[in-house]
Image 1 (cartoon, rainbow, N blue to C red):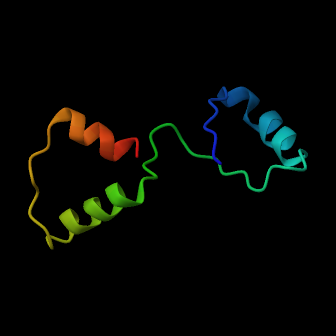
Image 2: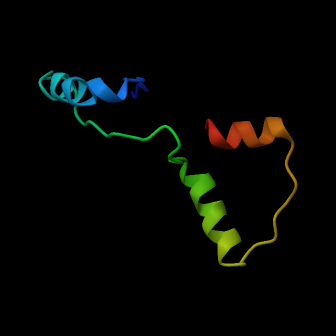
Image 3: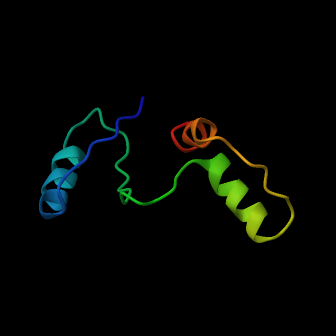
Length: 69
């Protein structure tokens, strides 16, 4: 199971140490607010940049589904 927790920048180190010291937490990964982590979206961007695919217009709802998958 994954959780996304927003922590203020000035408390990032405190939060990271707190989570590292909790025994049942397996992994801590810091993700910037503007960082794209969805593998499908990342692959699509790479394909577009390499010109190996032609973009297909998406509705805003479809785009949101890709981003928040």
